Image (cartoon, rainbow, N blue to C red):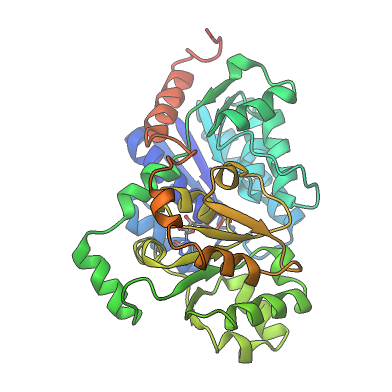
Length: 368
Ligand code: UDP
């Protein structure tokens, strides 16, 4: 196990599963358990054909951000000191990503950052700070898009350290879309037929941690002209209980977090998507579905500039944007012809190749 792949949340499992599978025996998965509920982690390990984690960190999920990162670094450094890998891979911008990057850097182990160079330029987002910390520490940065690579160059990262690979979400999505039989079974389980429904997910602190804002979002979802299937993230579920908003959520079609096949089947069929998720913002460009992004900033502007998504804050309200999309019946046909800005489906292969070159000591030094 020369490569330690550190991951801790649902999107990291989804986006790194292919890299872990491609590296095979070389890779050891270290799970920080930031997402510790089965339906955000175990389900994905199993369905994506990942081995059980080589090591799962203890007592991190649910702790404060500072404690999650501090305890993560502590446990990872102890592990790396006794079983030193030749390379550490981290993905994205979570507390697990930050802890994995710091532990690798403090132990002097080469670090590969997957999904590097995303920037919202919004310092209120903990993820933005995590991304910057990791960028300072990484030896090689796999940027999904040219825009992401340019962000890194502007911060002084050397061109030779950057590779534009695309995002693994493209092939991870293609691979997870089920056949017609499974799709129709999913649709009948959820009582939907055709595209007469909307799929919505909301989980970011900016939308869930204020009672007023969460109530406003839920009220607007209730007012939409189609039934709304609403997979409820654990954080959202906790806030809904705390703020006494069950009466609103009960007027939607709330469901537990979905496995990926079910989620993608519904997302692919829905009339449109509403979400504050980074992953869903990428997936809408692969599924060719219009999306209303409920966020005050985004680190994924490509999905908006290519016409797949439109961004609004909860305070501005989602109803106008939904009406605009519904009033444009030709939109989906247009989107079908627009390629995803997130790559050609070969990011996994490229990233695994870069990891192998780093283990062999071929990168760095770099030859550009
Ligand atoms: N997802 C899922 N089931 C759900 C909701 C989302 O499988 O009920 C997937 C979705 O397809 C996407 C990923 O989870 O790939 C996004 O994760 P999340 O929204 O937790 O994190 P973010 O991408 O915002 O960091």
